[in-house]
Image 1: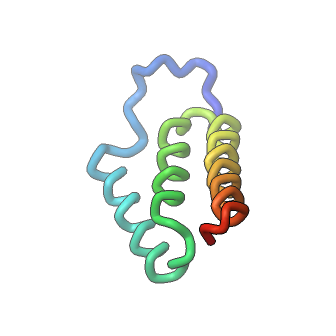
Image 2: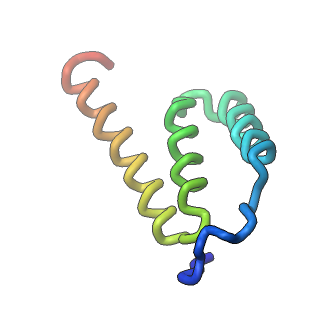
Image 3: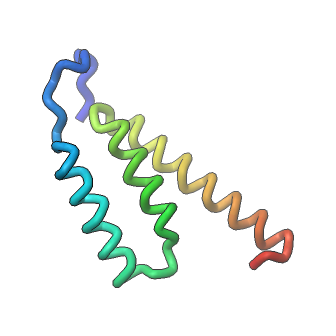
Amino acid sequence: MTDSSFDGTRKPLLSPGEVEDVFKDTEEVRDATFPDVPAELLAAVLAAEQTNLDNRTDAARAVARVIDEHLAAEGNKRAGGDA
């Protein structure tokens, strides 16, 4: 949802406790279903989403940046022999 009139006075979509629940629940799913996905990557994706709740385009760009940075770092590790 894009809201160009957002001025910071709107109530957050989720309370801090609810945000923590989302982080905890998605980590449980990641650990059980996708253990090869690093927990740090999931946390970074969720943080990118959380900081861009008012703009889906910015959120998508932020998530893409997080993933690109992760893949570049993994590629560098493998190129250096740290795989």
